[in-house]
Picture 1: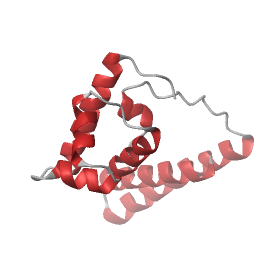
Picture 2: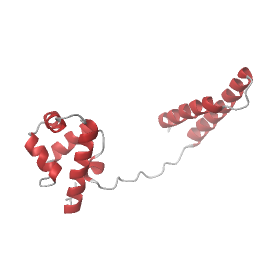
Picture 3: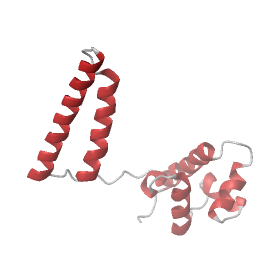
Picture 4: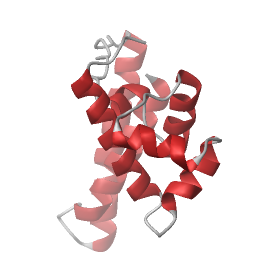
Length: 136
């Protein structure tokens, strides 16, 4: 991991505070978070004030508790994923999914006497997105 500048350390401290407030909104959140990651509340306060940087193993514990990446916690830009090219097989599968969505929407409309696919179209599109993640 790269060394943080003073402004990045301050941003990380703000991110820790913000995530703590979201994760532990009730009174005593600092103590609960400190206990969850295995440090004293005083140590956690130093991180939140930006006077000290957490060691890497504690950064890992923080991002696990908060459900975010280390880059996001430190205020660093996320690495961009290169676009992925689909194989012919994957393109064919996606085309089949699009056709199924179209046919299911038409069948639903015919059964219910509606011309607008509306909510069901949203459901089918959500299903398509989930299937795409699996096959791509």
